[in-house]
Image (cartoon, rainbow, N blue to C red; front, side, top):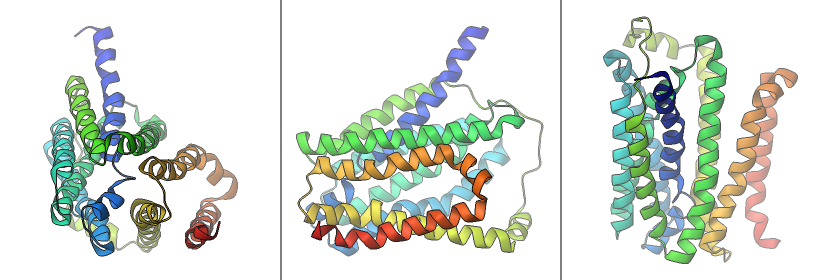
Length: 295
């Protein structure tokens, strides 16, 4: 492979990353209302939404260890695309809340493979540019989510509830083709993977525990609101499928912009103060949501 074709093949990876998240988020804003439309109650909505994160919580660390032990990431990333396509097709065909729960869990399995894809991306950067690699990964993820959520609502409004799932499956298949052209992560100097004892020792770190607990709580609030019951609440207030997409997009746009500025903000304000300001804004916006009916 000559130098130009090698550079071209490396461009497929960022494209495939964007398509990966589009395939997972095209139906994200309409899924809670879709569960209700399929006869699910609010408990079913919570189960379907939560299953996506639960499967990731169970699988991400084992998949990361497997990738380190085997020294391969691309097969795991390719499997993620295949599972994402299967999950989207299953959600489109499911007629009961139980079926939706099963296939939403499957899409969480697909999202778990992101650990391998992110390492593939970072491996194409030198170690001293790790922050740049992380910023690129975050930008690709957030940008794709903005595009997907805005498009998904429009598709559902004009083509029906199943349209976002079909579109997600098509995008996932295209992303799979792009990733197939991307090179495997470059081999780096061999490093012994951490053992279970090492991981257990790190997990007992007070700082790690406190930061992880804060992150878990933030994630819980974001998932329960934007990813779960805010779309249901908006639908009860009369929002159309397209408006459900715009509601989610309205959350993701400032998230994307803030993520790009987070490094500079934390340098100026300090990490602790930045986190406290973010937590305060999250709390206030969550408390204000039920009062939207009065506006």
